Length: 66
Image 1 (cartoon, rainbow, N blue to C red):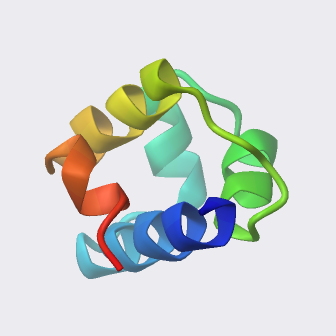
Image 2: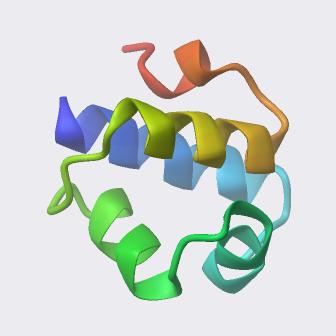
């Protein structure tokens, strides 16, 4: 599940033309945290998923789709 969320976050971020730094600014999370999340090393909370999805302009469900 961690890898799935990380892959989806990275894909959506790239599709939106955003860098990890830009996503960090918009979400209030650190770039280091986002890097760990996108590589599947972090286990995000529901609140974190919501913050990332909001910053990306997508539904939190989009981060969980296979």
